[in-house]
Amino acid sequence: MRAADGFTGRANSTLTCGDPGVPVPDALAVAQGFAREHGIKPTAHVVNGSTSEQAIRDAGWTVDLDHPGGAESLVMTGSLEKFADGVAESRDLPGWWELTAGSEVSAAQRHVLGSSEIVCFASLTEDERVIAAVRGAVVEDVLHVARLAVRPSHRRKGLARQLMGELAGWGLQQEAKICALQVAEHNEPAIRLYEELGCTEHHRYRYWIPAVS
Image (cartoon, rainbow, N blue to C red; front, side, top):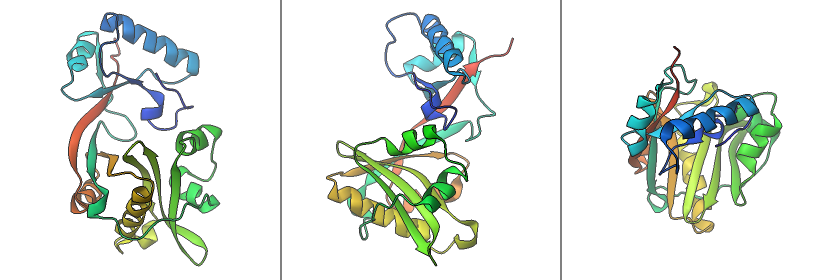
């Protein structure tokens, strides 16, 4: 069970992998209590086709079609060696946070994005202004990629590809071998980019919430 003041769906949901050790309705009741305690919406992070999915549906929960990031997301993975090109420098710049998290950055945002032991805040700049940014964190041999963003005025210039190549190079230096990332199913340009980098779909997930009676 995770809570981060509402910042990102993953950081404010209960991950439903494996046997909870109690009947699923009881586990969901605990999750609802946790959400109330932390002032967030009760949400279950459910892998499509998992053994938990049908039980959660039977318990009266439904897919959150109004989730800000979209109802369904893909988890994609790929080999870093296939697209590494250069090595990103980690720079915790104010412009990095403004582009990826907004003009006012909360303590929860800094914790979610910056609390990993091996983390990289990579960016590209123009005239001392951050024009593209991405965050990478290495856990064991996996580079977890998040918050890839390019300013609208600088899109369609290959900056996202360049930044991903540099982040992959950094990941290899940290002894990572593969990357893992999440992307909303409706974000077709991003999916195409990741496919061109050699990433493939590993699985999909959705967020489920209690049905309104």
